[in-house]
Amino acid sequence: MSVDITLLGGFSVRVADVPVADRAWRRRAASAVVKLLALSEGRALHREQVVDLLWPELSPAAALPRLHQAAHYARTAIGRPNAIVLRLDRVMLLPDADVRVDASEFRRSAEQALATGTADAAADVLASYAAELLPEDLYAEWLAPHREALGALRDRLLQLAGRTTGPGEAPGPARTLVGAAHHGRSRGLLLVIDDLAGADAASLRMLHHVAANITARGIGRVVELG
Image 1 (cartoon, one colour):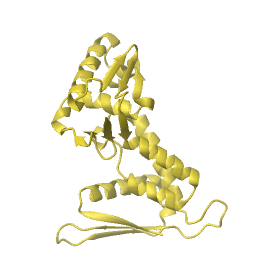
Image 2: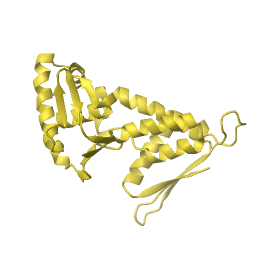
Image 3: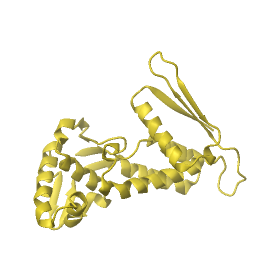
């Protein structure tokens, strides 16, 4: 069984290429358990880690029933009895399934691009994974380390994409990023950054977030020029 879990730009799950309806995740704890495990190494965590992260205000004795309830609703949403497995002291997400998590793919692709060390490789990864991690959970404390880690990778990619030379070569002119957005018959918006390498990382991250939203909504496009 194949399962696709999307975390960049918003949460969604597809099981055997069939999307899980949004209403199936009306229990926030159920989606939170899936999100947390999907971001964890091997899609598994110790039981105490899960309850400490998701219910830090509760004692372990009070939080464990909530974990079992959240696991039940997550299994119901995904439609598989082994979607969340609690075995001994471990909590596992889809241990027997072929699972694709876009945030994990971004991490692997980013590390490969950084190892390659070329601006084109970095630009390709940024273009494929431009959306922010779970924007609907902006203030979730348990998500902060994951958001910071992916943000740091994106910052390094942005720095590399701003280069036009390979390692050891003389620096060349910065690449130019041109964004064009059009909505219906209204006038378009054109944004040109002439010194991409000189822009600070936070501004570039915000720009890519806006660009991803525009592209996802089908109201515009972003063009990168070398």
